[in-house]
Length: 187
Image (tube, rainbow, N blue to C red):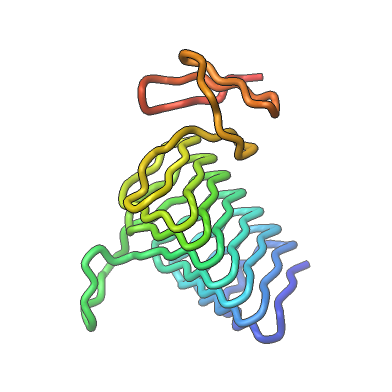
């Protein structure tokens, strides 16, 4: 069952079962939202947007054309997405760069993402970060501009590597795959 607050404007019929849409949300006709999502107060979702399953979009977020959120993504309060790399009033793009937030990634409150970037699987973007380039899987970034400050597990704990290996307190193990990539080891 879908739950839609009476003050929400929802034109899309592509809303997954179990999704909750809160007060003063506006979802345009072309948007697609998955199952068991939580779209909080004062969000705006444009036509060419795809939201996966079990995604949380906190208050005050606008998802503009070209934004793709995969499953299990967390978008913190007032995160800002942009979809035009050189905006001018009255000038409209025929297509928009795709901004992709991969499975399990978290975006801290007030983060700003420039258009056309990819946030990797289970990555974590710190509050207030200004993300100007792609972020890899399991990478922790923060600052302005956002820079890599470490690695994080799926459970959000910071990983400490001993050589090329890291073990998280949650039981997951990771292997450094070169200088700039990490992969989770099979259980």
